Length: 172
Image (cartoon, rainbow, N blue to C red; front, side, top):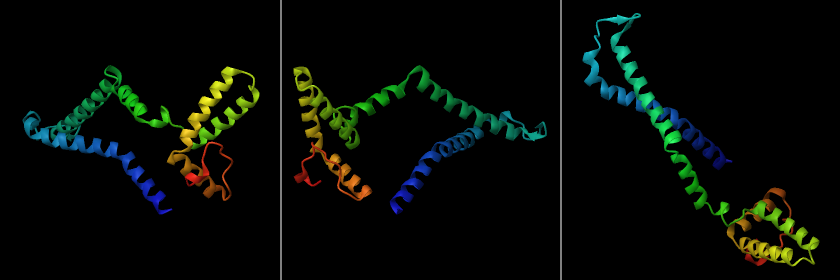
C-alpha cells in the first residue's frame, strides 16, 4: 500500500514537471534578459494603465514561450525525432521483439494447443506448433513468467492454471 502511494506521488511530480519547468524557463530567461533590454521600455509611461516595464517583461516571457513551442514543433513536425526515439525504445524492449509476457504466453500456449489438436495430419501446422512450443518453453524458463504465475497465485488465492511450458522445478 505504501509503495503504491509513493509511486502515485512520484508520478504526479513527473506530470507537473513540464508545466513547472516551463514556468521556471520563462521566469529565468525573462529576468536574465531584462537588464539588456530594459532601456527600450520607459518605466515612467503606461499603456492601457500598465507600466511599460511589465509590458516588456510580458513580451520577453511570451517570446520565450514562443521559442520553446517553435522548437517543440520543429522537433515533432520537421525533424520527427520522436519517431526515431520511439523506434529505439521498441528495439530495446525485449517484449516487443522476442520475449513474451506471461498473459500473452498463456493465450498463445492455449491457441497453439488447439492448433496442434486440429492439425494433427498437416506437416506445416506440426512444424509451426513445434516452433511455438520451443519459443514458449524458452520463455517459460525466464524469471518474468515465474513471477507472473506467482502473482496470479497470490491474487487468485489458488494454484495457478496449468501452464504446459513452465517447469515447476524452476521455482514457480
